[in-house]
Image 1 (tube, helix red, strand yellow):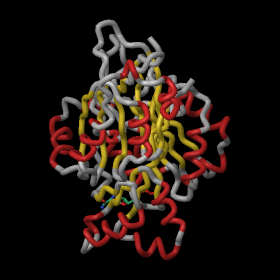
Image 2: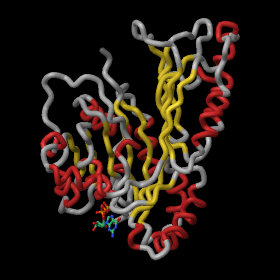
Image 3: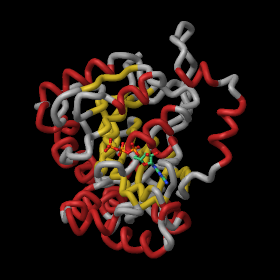
Image 4: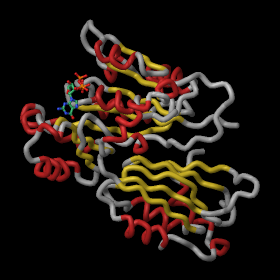
Length: 339
Ligand SMILES: Nc1nc2c(ncn2[C@@H]2O[C@H](COP(=O)(O)OP(=O)(O)OP(=O)(O)O)[C@@H](O)[C@H]2O)c(=O)[nH]1
């Protein structure tokens, strides 16, 4: 069976915004999902690496220099390949506070490793320091706009989280903004927990070892995760042009979309697997499994989205007579299909 692609998520944010805290939160709430981490540290004492070292299955640490400056495409590929070949479900790159997120996104998108899947750029913003940091570093505005997901962290430290959330939302435009404390975002935003059958021999992950620690487990359920909506839509065949228009005009706030799409157009009756993160879209063509029902099934994840409107918009893409659809109509979706 072909190896699954591994989403590579970049976690960026100014110094002290809570990147390591978020990473530790993810690592201790994985429920069996195996995470590889690239940590990028400054200074001689590798404090961040030490704080996650006990909890991580695969970790690469750069002790000198800034990831986006020190690593070119080939260097990034070498690192990612080391991680994607290690039977992982997710790779998280923790950018240094000084790293330029745009360069890191470019490096991941330019990867030639066929197992690398762009998993999105998360920009962490320190709610307590937001206005001061922004005044000192105007590039923060651009980082927020560039992100696929903005995590407004440390809302416990501000008197009026609502005002600040509104301010960051205005700046972020269509990008979803999740106010949170201590980086407690739901890991499901970044990776799928549902896995196929477990391999018989599999090295224990940190989470497996923690499983019996009921206290630790309860702890992560005590706190409300940052609010977001998940919506599952099941439909028949979709008209390719209408679906392409839906993809192009998809509403802000929609962070991820994933699932199966069926077009049923002559010559294109295969199964298409959709993966979107922010503005990034990819479709992969494959064959249906024996007995698998030909239909569309999508999961949409976002914040501030209108689930009913999205469901209606997708239902409006349905095509009752796909056999009669002209093959040329596939062109707008074929540009998202990897050869
Ligand atoms: N009050 C409060 N403190 C937080 C929160 N999130 C993180 N912190 C604290 O903020 C400090 C910085 O957090 P880190 O996770 O180390 O931040 P970082 O972005 O990794 O920092 P650098 O690697 O230095 O860029 C730590 O002392 C955290 O415990 C939060 O939501 N509320």
